[in-house]
Image 1 (cartoon, helix red, strand yellow):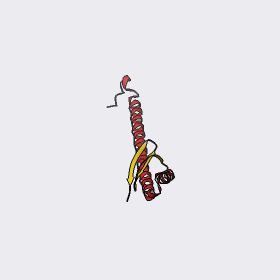
Image 2 (cartoon, one colour; image 1 turned 45 degrees about the vertical axis):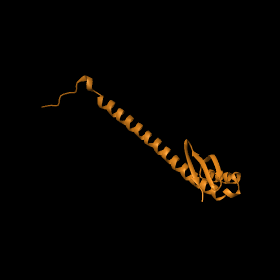
Image 3 (cartoon, rainbow, N blue to C red; image 1 turned 90 degrees about the vertical axis):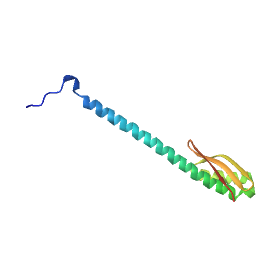
Amino acid sequence: MSPQPAAPGDRGSATVWAVLLVALLCAATAGLLALSHALTARHRAGAAADLAALAAADHALEGEATACALAARVASAQGARLLRCAVVGEIADLTAAVGPAQVRSRAGP
């Protein structure tokens, strides 16, 4: 028996399915890359906030202005920006951000 020819309406349907599959794979890859970028920014912001809070707490007795200026320098060196800084006694409480990710950190004795 010889193979039967495809019906006229089915010609090229595999191409359409292949294009849809490739588009779906591209969308999934883009989603995973965006998630990876967000998680990386969150971790970088957390590390910068922790280091900046430790630096501010270490210099808390020198005054809030000095401690927060040092915290801003430490956060900047980590690629983050300091959004908020408060020093009460020996406890530093601050928020650092990398992109849209914001992390609050506290440090003290």
